Length: 293
Image (cartoon, rainbow, N blue to C red; front, side, top):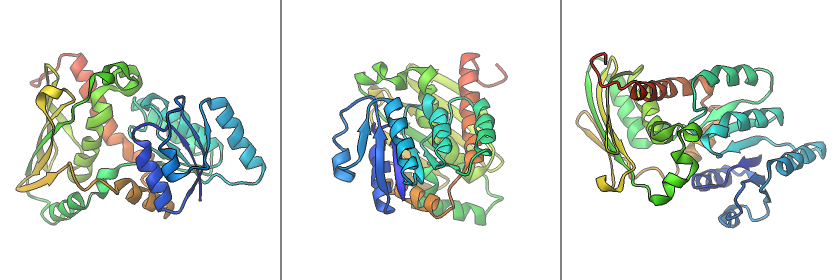
């Protein structure tokens, strides 16, 4: 299987390892920054480009020479994901896209319509759905569907001073903390408990507090990237504790294995988590704090 990749930042190492683990070959990669020495560990012969136009031309050249590009891995900044997914589809490839698929839910339908015109499929990386402890817990919940579960999440992952100068701090480009971080857990909660409703939202000096509910759960979630709150990644679901700091080493590989086996999660799977994150962002702008405010 032949791959090309857009974006070689922090998350790309997990994708590179996954490509290697499934027996793939990375033919070409693109990133505007050239500090990409980590490529050597995985695919030292990969052709590297810092300009999209030259990368695009190279990919087209490969196709004209009869070299099939099977997958395009999209690890670029959030606001470029849907454009890079369309690029991959135009190459005749399937796409493997990091979260979030788009930063505005209204763009999901547009991308789905676009996908219909091509042979490839857009596949999502929803790695928490493959976490062994969480999969076992989902099975237990399925066996007792009438139980109402209390959930508490505390996810504090400090970011240094660099963060506020990066694209991730630009809400127009990243979607903010919710699209960068919380979207992972909104997808997890949806997969475990079904449709979510936002009950309250409070932002308190760098600490984001949410109360959510579904037909099967009441969820309290706290997020922060502020170093004052320290490092904590804990999840309590009923009487079960999940250490979110462990068990993540091979989740991207599990996603890739499912995708190359034809069982990848498609565009529709992105809707619930993106919708709830967009709802949080909008209600934050409206000054929402529960109680119909």
